[in-house]
Length: 226
Length: 158
Image 1 (cartoon, chains in turn blue, orange):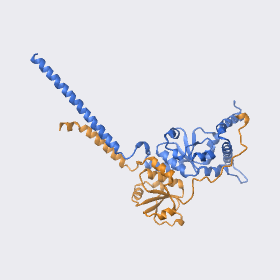
Image 2: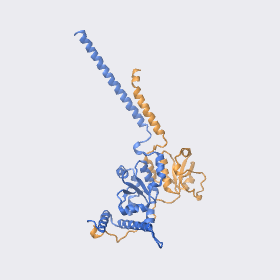
Image 3: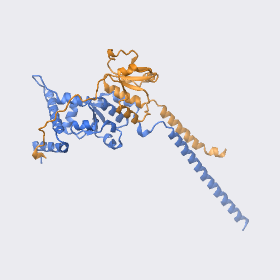
Image 4: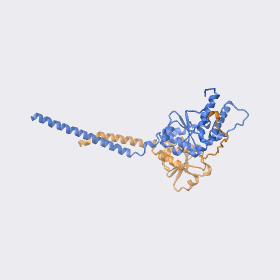
């Protein structure tokens, strides 16, 4: 072996050692970085997936605005028109829901609000979600929670089912003259009352077929195809 | 020494991360509580307090009227303040809330306002907050549905 070839081997060994050292340094750096990030995450005081996404001042501002409410008359119109751009959520217990509910509503009891199974239903971008309970309180709790979690397009039916009964189910006109606007309002209420009474009087097995039957009757009246 | 120099970048990244976390957490408008805690309290009604319970409290308390109306005279509560709901989180008002010793009792003649305020403050990490419940049962259905026993689907429609 010549002096030159020995020198070459020695240079090659040094290069290997140098590469190994660089690799080792990189490993140490990444390890320290990961451990550091891990420690920071471990000491974070909350779980981001389970906390409100909105800022407090934003949520307060939304809460104070009247835009979060729909009146029972507006909801009655949605029911009469079978408006597909809204969904009505009944947040009462399953037992109360069975007794009577607003036609077309979905029962998500308040205690089930955070169930991940309901997330796709509640977190709608295109469809407006309207919450209602018997009164105003639980629906407002629900609204604040889902809105805080970043589910936009959420609303409350103001006054809940108590207001629905008072305004839609029991309203009567007692004047002598009626303006066209009042007439339209009472007709809207009368139609909603009829649907509410009919659908809640039917056995559960027939409830889903009610709307099919209603649509068919409507198409016959409009002169459309069956 | 040489190794420490090599770790400079790593330490720098960690410091930046730490600063970001500290800045985020010190932001007073960020919610820190788990939503589940609010849901559980509401479910058990443990966030409500009656006037009788309030007067029997041994710890200190302050009633914060966030509604549009005055406190009912029948309550005869002297230690109360008024903070409008929409300004509840203004710097000065927030300081007042933070400095309250003992329990914070929210009152509003409109139960919806108190409900929303309770959720927001609870999620901001305020502890010992209650809603003053004057004994009404806002979530009780006051009407009984009378089914129409003659209701049926038309035969040709089914």
